[in-house]
Amino acid sequence: MSEIIKEISSPIIPVIDSILVIPLVGRYEELRAEELLNRTLLNLPLYKAEYLILDLTALKGVDQYTFDFLQKFKNSFSIGHTLHICRDFNRT
Image 1 (cartoon, rainbow, N blue to C red):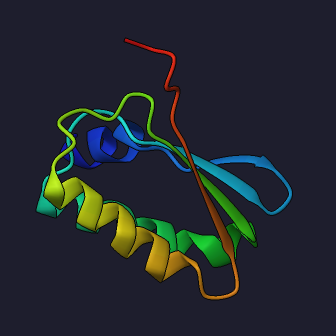
Image 2 (cartoon, helix red, strand yellow):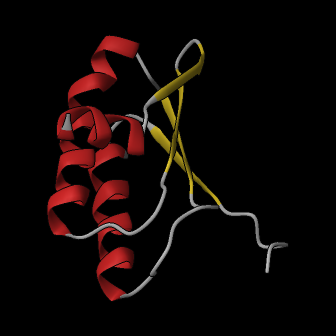
């Protein structure tokens, strides 16, 4: 059951050919962040993704670890691909 919860808590959503969206929901501690990064990198070839959009709208508890994680995510993905990070800054 915990594997299903992990998978749906940050789903990898194919939007159209070569574009994936991952909404980041809640807080990301080390284990959850590493699992998401590993799962994403493993699935990129399956989706033939060239673009990845991270939606940060529901991200909670942004701290230095979160910034470092996002930088690591960006560096891991950027080899031959494009990463976009989206955030709804109009929300309070």
